[in-house]
Length: 105
Image (spheres, rainbow, N blue to C red):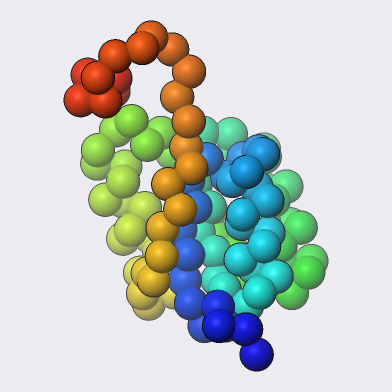
């Protein structure tokens, strides 16, 4: 049994690259995963792969630049799986270079 069995992990930026691979790795090691990104088609494809492999997954199409959306992600994880043990904040932002407090205004 993996140390991740029974844990719930939230992964932002899960529609590709590192986020996608991270979600699959956590699921393969027994964690229930909540994936989040702006790309619905990609999240659906990831969910299908995780579930086909026997994993537990739920996704939320969201933009993490909106503070209220972050609160909704945590609420969704708790609603679906009863808890949240870990978050992987992988979402990236392409655009202007500025202070983090100014990027998502």
